[in-house]
Image 1 (cartoon, one colour):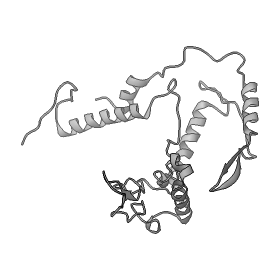
Image 2 (cartoon, rainbow, N blue to C red):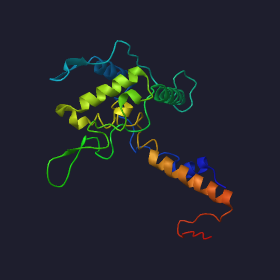
Image 3 (cartoon, rainbow, N blue to C red):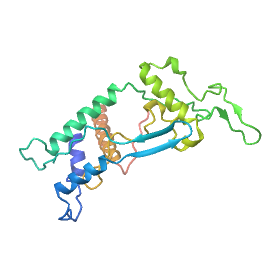
Image 4 (cartoon, helix red, strand yellow):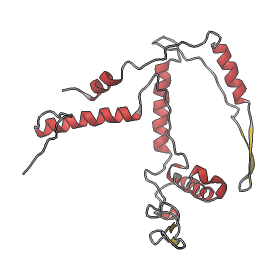
Length: 223
């Protein structure tokens, strides 16, 4: 029986790399200089709701070359990947956020129902609060509760409507994935889910003593 790793390896390995190499002028020195110059950039943002703020990198900034292909140097691609995976998992768990959305699903976080004709009516499920659960009842730390409150308050302002902070308040307003990957050098989360689903299906069929699954047929079990 194929294992989950064998299924993934057969379908997604080796990863597809770009056909062209990096330009000869893109050296470590050039990339280091570019990164340091970008870190010195300051951006000023102004808002009638939160005032004027300057955004930029902090004072601690370190640039180092990452070696690849199993070299014996200190910073290798394998070491960096392991470090990122460790702390990404650590911070995702230690942040204390929730695994479910906080907005009221019947009214989709609007606080009111939108009938076909007539004026909007207050949502009877959330009583117009737009939340599925009151903030004081959230099983999170006080600091996390305050950040959730900030997301909900900023999300209600017209100038921040496009950010949909109220919808993603349970993850402190961040609506993306914590990591990003290159399609040329890696695989997708969807492909990994498909491989995991296929592996679990084979395990379930074997455990139940059923014949091997076939995508071209439909198994009907009657009692």
